[in-house]
Length: 504
Image (cartoon, rainbow, N blue to C red; front, side):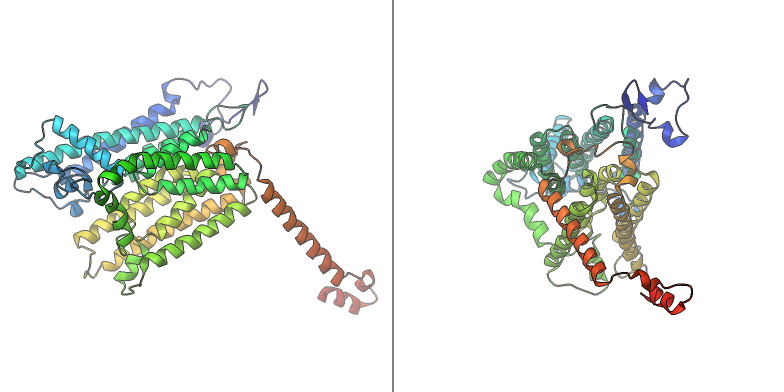
C-alpha cells in the first residue's frame, strides 16, 4: 500500500496473526517492539539450555555422571581435562588442538578468565582442583557463548529491518528473529561445542554484505572460516550469486577480504606451531565415516565403502554442480540465503561426519531461506529426533550390538530426509519466485547487498536469448515438417477426414 507517495510494507506481525491493523490501532510501545520479545526469548532459551546441563555437573562421589543418559553432553569441560588445558599447556604449541585458530583463541581467552576467577591452572593442580576448574571454565564459556547468541539475534533483527529498496519503508522480516531466539535447536545443542561463536561471525558477515560492504563482509566471513569450516560455503554461495548478476568486482573484494583475514589469524600460528595448527586439517582429511553421516549408517549395515573421502567429495561435487545449474537457470536470480542453504546441505548430507551441533550452522540460514513456522518446525523436529537418537546410541540403549540399533539408522535417515524435504521447498520457491514468501511484497533479496535488484549478467542474458531463439527455430521447423492442412479437417460429410485430423 502507499502512504504519501511512499511504498510501505503490510503490517508484519499482525499481518500474520489476523490481518491488517485497523485505522485507529496503535502499534507503538514495548509490546510492538520485536527486539523485546526476541531478547526475552533468547534469554529463556539459554536458561533452559543451562538447566539441561545441570545433571552433567560433577558431584562428590559421582565425579562423572553419564552425559549420554542425561542428554547433556558437552565437549567444553571434557576437552579442558583431556587436552591438558587444565595444567596450563600452550594451545597449539603444546596441545595439538583439533579446532581452527579462532576457536583456539576463544578457548585461550576463556581459560585466562577462568584463572582470573580463582581456578588453579597449573601442572601441580590436584585432580579435584582440575575438576573444579573445568566447571568454572564451562560456566565462563556458557556466558561467553550466550553473548554470541544475543549478538546473533541482534544481527538478525537488523537484517529484518533492512530496507532492500529505495522508497520501501519499514521492517521486512523483523519478527523472523524470534524463530532463532526461541529455537529448540539452541536449547538442545548450544553448549555441545563452540559453534555459536562461528554462527555469530557468519551472521555478522551476512549483515555487512547486505549493507553493501563486500570487502569487510568477506573479512568477517574469513574470520568465521578461521573458527569453523562451513562459512567458506557462504562465500561459495556469494560467488554463484555474483556470477549470475555480473558483479565480479564485489566478488573479488569479498574473496580478497576473506583471504586476508584468514591469513592474518592463521599465518602466525602456522609459523610458530605448525603441528598444532595442522591437527584440524589432518584429522578431517584422514577420518573415516563417523557419527551422523549416511556413510556411517552404511558401515553399521555392513557395507564398508573404500575411499569414503573420495566418494563423499564426488557426491558433494555432483550435487554442488546441480545447485550451480539451478542458480543460473532459475527464472529469477535466487536469494542469497536460498543458495547458502542448498550449498550447505550438499556439504552436510554427504559429509563424513554430521554432529548434532551442526544444526546450529543451519538454523539462521533455514530461517532466512524460508521463514515459515510450519516448515521451520518440521526441520526442527527432524533435528530433535536425531538429537535423542545419538545419545541413546552412544549410551548403548540403541548402540552397537543392541537389538534397537536400527532406530539410530532410522534417525539419521529421518534427519537427512527432512532436510531434503526442506531443500525441495526452497527449490520450489526458486523455480516459482512469484510464490516466494520472502519476496512478497516488492522485495528482491534482503541479503543481496550489491546484487539486490540487479539485472542478470549480459553473458547470461545473451545465452538465454540464444536458447529461446533456438527453441523458436525448432518449433518453426517442426511446424514446417508437420503442416496443418485446413482441408484435412474435413467436413461433416466426410467422417474419415475428421478421424485423420484427430490421429494427427
